[in-house]
Image 1 (cartoon, rainbow, N blue to C red):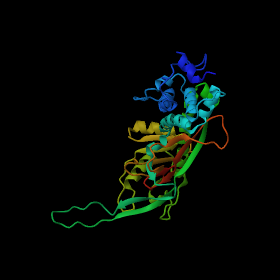
Image 2 (image 1 turned 30 degrees about the vertical axis):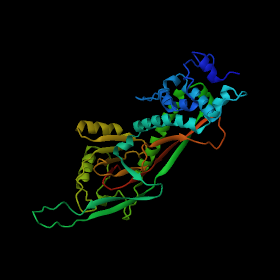
Image 3 (image 1 turned 45 degrees about the vertical axis):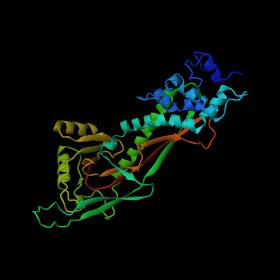
Image 4 (image 1 turned 90 degrees about the vertical axis):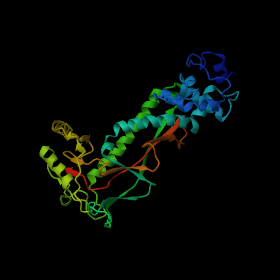
Length: 364
């Protein structure tokens, strides 16, 4: 009985007869050598560019999913005389090492799609959490402006005021991605890549749900008062139009912060319900204002918000785990049920919180 590798080496075309046509990796390379190129080979099959790919990655390009599954199986245990090639492949595709190769490229695609879909991140600040326990997030201000001093004059002490705190908690959202044996044997990398991108879309939508829920909830901060109230000068109780927008812009300038200072904030983001998108974009364009419009179907009909830039005054925060480089992580996963293929899990550690009152809520 000849093995898959022997047939690959004997034939310049290689592969399963009549199906895979590509040059086999050199005989001097062990299965572990070939698997070292796996992440780059899968990335290339997924359309992810890499300027410095592994030298063996190109030799796997014709049938990367099936070949890597076979070599992953050999890395676990050499092919036995009674084992078919597909038996070895099945052993390999069920391994965590094989799933990790698929997960690496899937993570890249998922995060690219997340970035494209997560429009809400334009007006959100990013807040790092040390762990998954509840964390206090607060607003800071100083008691007044800087005082003029002359040479040798003693400096007056000032205070940093911390208040209006909110509790935030990072949570994990996840979904299982299963790649069936047929998909791997047939090297349908495009379908798997599409699934990875769909996970990125799902992650962005999940985080957006949290953000817009935080905006609409009008929570109570630790000073005992809700975020949006006429007494805070951050409510415009009228439908969206040029007059209401002007009132909101003025309110961002004149509202008083916890240290007694006037905010004097510039409007940077207009967030509107789906029914207001056209009117909002038209008004901002015709007015020549440097304000970014973001629309969402998750907001109540007629609702709109005006926010400063998150770099100038954070108001809505999205949470991330300290040290995490991407919002979406795809990782190998052990399924609770036996599955004929490879299993991964996509997770998104996120959450949202209102961290300040320096934004305007509009709408009847």
